[in-house]
Length: 84
Image (cartoon, rainbow, N blue to C red; front, side, top):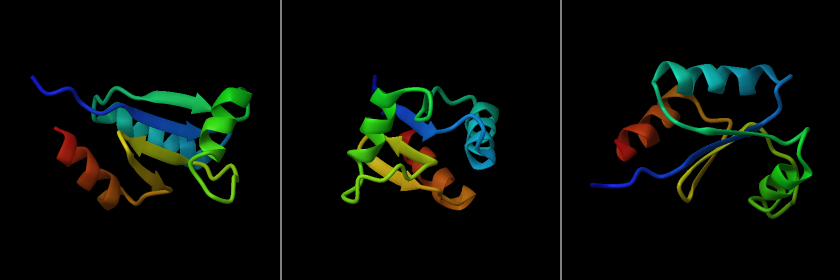
């Protein structure tokens, strides 16, 4: 059995785009980890380390080793379909 890559959503609860991606993932019954970068310095540092400029570029979704910064529905669907 294949193990699915872990999906992580880096964002902030107050961010409407973060909320959009939460709904997007939930409506597709995908397991994901929501990492609130405003409530956790650990998550904030994890996100900063994904980018050379060390900025809090959220929302960012990681699927395994793939990093998606503010992806369109089409981009996100493409990567989700590759893991199914």
